[in-house]
Length: 106
Ligand SMILES: [Zn+2]
Image (cartoon, rainbow, N blue to C red; front, side):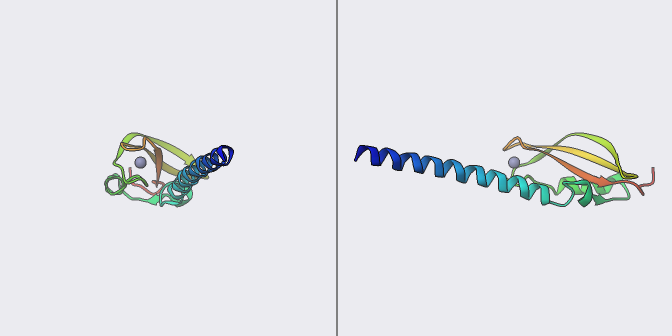
C-alpha cells in the first residue's frame, strides 16, 4: 500500500513537472510566432516614431511589462533591421523585436 502511494505521488510530481515544462515551451513558441519576433515577421517602419509606437503597445506573453534594454542594428539578406531587446518585469524573459528599416529615411 505504501509503495502504491509512493508511486502515485511520483507520477503526480512528474505530471506536474511535465505540464509546467509544456506550458513554458508553448509560451516560448507563442512568443516566437508573434509579429516582430523574427526578421521574417519584422515590422516595416518608415520612422523611428513608429518603432516607439509598436514597443509601447507590446507586452510579454505572461502579461508583464516589457522594458527596453537596448537596441542594435542587424543586416540580413540585404535588408537592414533595428532590433530592440526587451526584458519582462515579471518573468525576466528577454525577447527581441525586429523592425525593417531598409527604406527608412535617415
Ligand atoms: Zn513575462
